[in-house]
Image: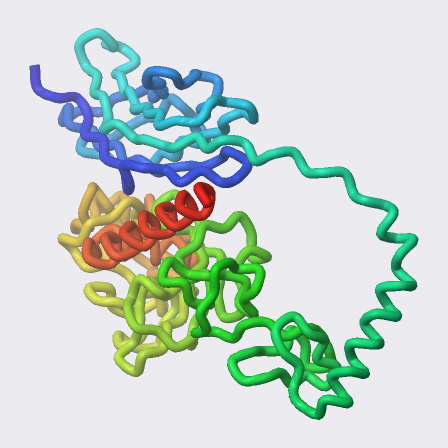
Amino acid sequence: MPRAFDITAVTDSIRLSPAGQGEVAFTISNALRAPVRARASVVPGPGARAEWFSIQGETERDFAPDGTQQLTVQVRVPPGTPPGRLTFHLLVVDVLNPDESYAEGPSTGFDVRAAPPPKKPFPWIWVALAAGIVLILGTVIGIVSSRGGDPELREPCPDGSCDKGLACTGQDGGVCLLAAGQACDGGALCYTGFCNRGGLCELPLGESCTSQADCKGPLKCTEVLGNRLCMLKPDAACERDSDCSSFFCRPDNKCNRDDGRCDANEECRSPSTCSPTKLCQLPNGAQCTRNEACLSSFCSTTCQPAPINFQCPAGCPPFSACSFGRCIPVSGATLNQDALIGAPRTRENIQQQQQLQLQLQQQQLQR
């Protein structure tokens, strides 16, 4: 019997947050050539539990002939779960004929990490020694001043200056730490807060994040294929598309704006072009997951000419797009994610960075 549905995922592996949470988006296409109401469910692999998974929105949806919809699965692994590699896949069935018309999606994996050791209780006796610490710091500052040279590693820098190869953690005072590009054996000694796999201090570009607080300096916590990574903000200096939160390093080696808006085609990552509503949207034939990502206002795995009932004859106002016959506002993150789906080289670079970062973390845990 021919397949009932086509199911694809933007990634085959989810990077869970330290709290054991993550999500991944699936694209479901109706292959029955007829209207159908379908039900989606998650099938856990060996060792996984059904209660760890939830589907955003409705689990039952109506599909037009050749219709396509996107569905997001959220994963929440409870604390104390034994570490290891686990999997799951999506099952989609025809509600009226589940035994004959169904399809199983690709296997998606995720790694459960060992829980960190419990934090030691705060040594309150240190509070009683605060006055002594202040006295010691004062003595150190006096020694540094009498020596006449700039402060060295971990020494206070009240005037904001440090010895060669170091940086002060504050313009009006702090301590001296290793500057970017200096050799290191741990992020605690780095001004950037991160020691890379080559043993050099640098910004945590490509590292996993749960909020903006995890990303230092010119970095932004960005949604990337079901994960969240530290990526360079717009106008930051870049070397490749996979460095930027917009996934577009312009020819002038600066990250492009990441709000999805534009005034000219040069502000859009190819093959996107600047639409009449000043959004970077994809042409017909490009891979997509949402109608609003397409210039044609219609997505069925790829952007295609829109049926009459999907069109907005009067046009849409600036910074909005037509979807299912009505104009809706569009976020830059939505457009950026769809543009990334059709950029295999950029996706590969990002995934390689994630794998290298994971290897580094494992090496540090083994030390």
